[in-house]
Amino acid sequence: MVHFSAEEKAAITGLWGKVHVEEAGGEALGRLLVVYPWTQRFFDNFGNLSSASAIMGNPKVKAHGKKVLTSFGEAIKNMDNLKGSFAKLSELHCDKLHVDPENFRLLGNVLVIILASHFGKEFTPEVQAAWQKLVAGVATALAHKYH
Amino acid sequence: MVLSPADKTNVKSTWGKIGGHAGEYGGEALESRTFASFPTTKTYFPHFDLSHGSAQVKAHGKKVADALTNAVAHMDDLPGALSALSDLHAYKLRVDPVNFKLLSHCLLVTLACHHPAEFTPAVHASLDKFFSAVSTVLTSKYR
Image 1 (tube, chains in turn brown, green):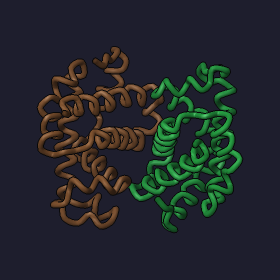
Image 2 (cartoon, chains in turn yellow, brown; image 1 turned 90 degrees about the vertical axis):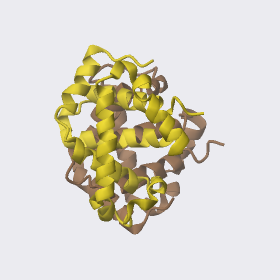
Image 3 (tube, rainbow over the protein chains, first blue to last red; image 1 turned 30 degrees about the vertical axis):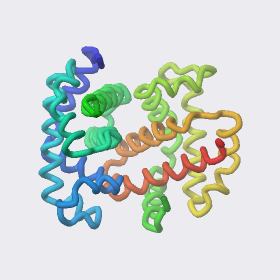
Image 4 (cartoon, rainbow over the protein chains, first blue to last red; image 1 turned 45 degrees about the vertical axis):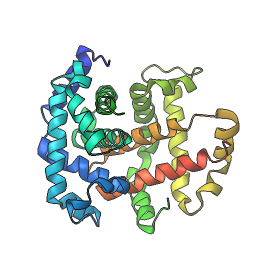
C-alpha cells in the first residue's frame, strides 16, 4: 500500500487545483499517442491519427483524455486507497480493454511531463517526486486486478 | 527505431536553444529530479555527497550534459561518438539499463519545465527517441 505524507498530498492537491482537466487530459492522451505511436493500437475507431497535429486536434482523443484525467482526479481524492478506488477500472482494463499495464506507466510519465511544461519552476524536484509516487500508485492500482 | 531527419532537426534546434544552460540543467535538475523521484538511482553514487547543492552532483550533471551535447553534434554516428562511454558503462559502471529510462524521463521533465514553448508534442517525441537511442548505444556492449 502506498502511503503519502502530508507534504506529498499537499504537493499533489495544490497543483491539481490549478489543472484544467479537460485540456490537460486531451494533451496527455494526445502526447501518449504521438510519442509512443504503438499505443494507437487501442484507438482504431478514433479516426484521423495520421500526424501529431491530427492527433492533438482529434475530438475523440480530447474527449477520451478528459474522461481518463477526470478519473485520475477522483483517485486524488482517495490517495490512501488507490487499489480500492481503481478496482473496477482495473477489471475493465484487463477483461474488456486488454491494455498492457506498461501503458499506464507511459501515460503517467507523460502526465508528469505535461505538468512540468505547464508549471515550470513550480514543478520542483520535490513536487515531481510526489507526483511520480502518485502516477506509479495509480498504475499499480490499475494493474492490481489483472489475471 | 531510427531517428528521422525531422527528429534530428528537432533535437539540434532544441539543444541549440538550451545554449549555455545545458550544464546547469544537467546538475541542478537532472540529478536533483532523478535522485528525488527515483531514490534507487542513488545506489550508483555511494561515493558522492548527495546533499542539496552538492558540487559533485553539479559537476557530474555537467559531465552528462556535455556528453549529450557531443551526441547531438554526432547524431549520424552515435555508436562512434559514444564508443568510449559505451565501454565505460559496460565494463566499469554497469548501470542497470532501467536507469537510463529514469534519467531520460527526468531530462524531458527538465526541458519541459524550462522550455515549455519549444516542447511541442513533435519535439517531445523526437527528444524521447534521441535519449532512447543514446541509452541503447550506452548499453549496447553490456552482453
